[in-house]
Length: 63
Image 1 (spheres, helix red, strand yellow):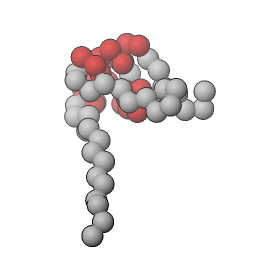
Image 2 (cartoon, rainbow, N blue to C red):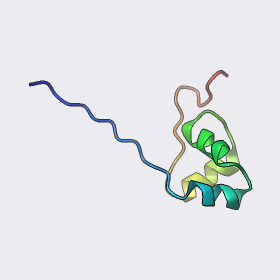
Image 3 (tube, rainbow, N blue to C red):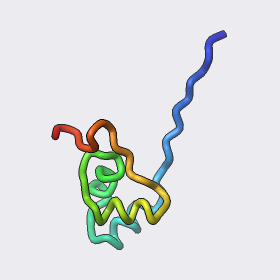
Image 4 (cartoon, helix red, strand yellow):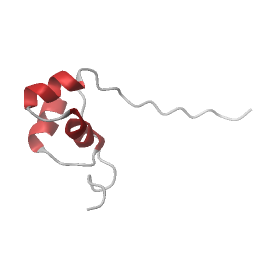
C-alpha cells in the first residue's frame, strides 16, 4: 500500500463581508490571500482575521 498525501488548505469564510468592510471586491481580496496581488491593507486585515496570506515564490505571479 502506498502512502496517501493529503494537502489541506484553509478556507476563508466571510470573504464577502471582509471585502465590503475594506471597500474592495471579493476577487481582489482572494487574489491578495492567494499571493497573486499585494496590498498591505488587505494583508493586515487577513492576518487580523487569522488567515495569513499565502505567498508562492516571491509573492507575486508574473512579477
